[in-house]
Image (tube, rainbow, N blue to C red; front, side, top):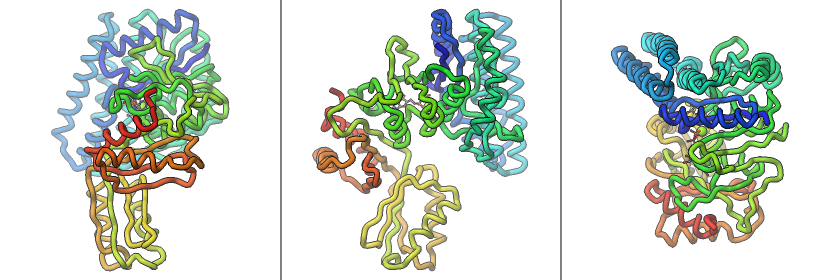
Length: 467
Ligand code: ADP
Ligand code: ASP
Ligand code: MG
């Protein structure tokens, strides 16, 4: 088989784990598979890069050196464990140093200019994957395998210029990937390609959105016409709920593309929401597998592989790190355009609205946004609402969670909402906001963050998802 294998940040966060990845690749090569590797940045390096870029925007040059030093040490320590061959170890460290020196220059530039555009931010974010792909490729060499490492740009992935959330130009990309990557596979050289990052038509670095390495894997899978795309992660597959929260969560053996995409969109972190787009058209199956349990065949996402379940609810996602804003006021009643103004103000300030609910009285509207954007959203709304024909009170609930209950069979089935809310009420948990899209494929509601796990657990039990 020809397979694209993507290894997530959780699978490459230490030297031992990278050796484990190399063993998995070697085992698959030995049984005759053709393998193309895609890797994410190690652990939470992407988050650290974002934080650092935002810090230096406010000018703190001395801190840059400290960050650079730590970043080098972190990667050098990983190399010390993942690569045994002395020369290879030193060569790889030297290469890491070169890459990190380049990052230092960019961070210093941001510091002096005092401005962090989405374009520059993508440049900074590309370094996590550049470092991890290099180390994984060297570790494969250390395992007596031939390997070559590429950035997404070098591999030929071309996108539009929507920095931070770029879209691949599939025809051009396919053409380039076939030219650059196919010959290596023929020669049994394993290509290791950075996930998440690509370049626009002018060669400027872009990123595919958070968690975008999954997307890189499916883009490559389609271009190289592979038999399957394997997404290796740290759990057994896509499960009925996050196994880190619900111990009884069960692995779903098969999912249709539609079901998997819906789960990703509604917050099951195991998969990037847009990653399935390329493979659906070509009917290429995607398998989610566990690097720490490679005997398990994981979850197969393919056409017709529906979840077998008598229950209407199939999975539950818990979304943390969100806050709720409430805008109240009699001034909104019967005033056309008042909701539009609220959305417009938030949109112009790049604050993404994740969920909305209003009452027919028109006197209040509740909005869910990322918690990191709460302070900014509150001040923007307050300034904008002053003296306008809008609400007259803006309040926030900082620590809330969204729970999304999913299942294609929910459509048209009676009593699902009542079972969900009764099971939550039995645990004495207060529901603060509810929304159901007209697709009826999911119901989302909001509770206090401290109640989130218990609410998910009660629904998981009510619908017998661990059976
Ligand atoms: P990776 O680093 O491999 O990309 P992610 O952290 O992006 O891994 O996604 C894997 C994590 O997603 C798991 O460790 C698990 O805690 C979480 N998760 C949330 N919901 C689900 C779900 N329904 N099924 C499986 N994993 C889930
Ligand atoms: N490293 C990137 C992120 O953290 C992409 C990925 O992990 O898929 O979002
Ligand atoms: Mg991920």
